Length: 207
Image (cartoon, rainbow, N blue to C red; front, top):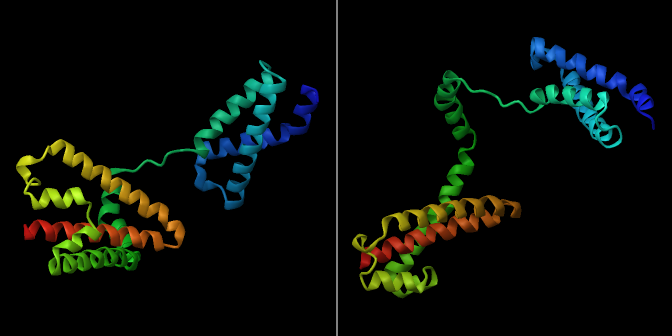
């Protein structure tokens, strides 16, 4: 296909994209109807393909320069980052965040319940028999606590804090990823971490 044929076939699409861009630039994206927004996104993607085609078949042409400019200008409206004002941030802290907490309170309380259940069961197990800690905690941790080598004076604080941080991040990631198992994997992660903390707390208390 020659460049002239390519322009003749697709020029109406580019003109439409340019007119929508000018409208958004002048009045804002809210001035468009939902169908116009969908149309803008569609012809933006289509014109992006046209730019790639022009760069491949008509490099260094005026067409490639024109399309590159048009796509570049439209790009800012498609992938714009929404700016948050100080008042908007404060409004979210006071109203938006509490609203989300109420909306998802069942999930939050359920998550805490599974975590707390693991902790309580582990505390009871270790309280009844210290040897039960072997089912939950690594043997080297149990040995360190039993021999009194896990006191604060023996800690390398930067190392311990980094280990705690890495552990918390990995737990959060596992809980998120295991959501793919309809939440069963996430429940296991919450329960297991509750059990670890419960067993650790009880073992330290007993020693």
